[in-house]
Amino acid sequence: MQQERLRILVVDDEQDVREITCRIVKRLRHEAVAAENGQRAIELLQTERFDLAVVDTHMPGVDGNEVRRFIKENLPELGVITASGMSLDHVKTDCIPPRHVYLKKPYQVAELIDAIAKLTQEKQPA
Image (tube, rainbow, N blue to C red):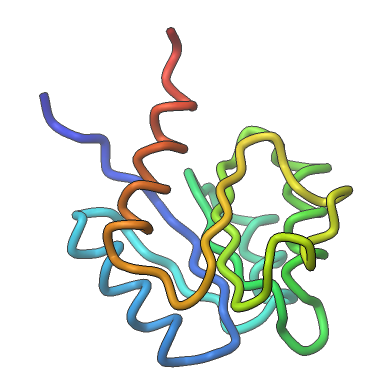
């Protein structure tokens, strides 16, 4: 059985983290679309289709909490991986979408792979 090719939005203000995450996503044979900040992420979410999003929490301007709130209110079926150097306590609970996985930075490649798999399986009908 061939795995579905996913379109994954990678949102992080740190260029190195963004590029590494995109490389991992591409190695998994998925499409990665990068956004350097929360404002750009919301613009992309309004105009393009994504299967998952990997969202950093702390970014200048529009932060990850605002991006997740936008997703929760407008795209609740979208799976979200929160990636943060802070604990989950720093993620506002009112903006956690229904399909959500938290990863503490720096995360291992296997953790990202597991998070993508978990959210992909949740999306599949039983």
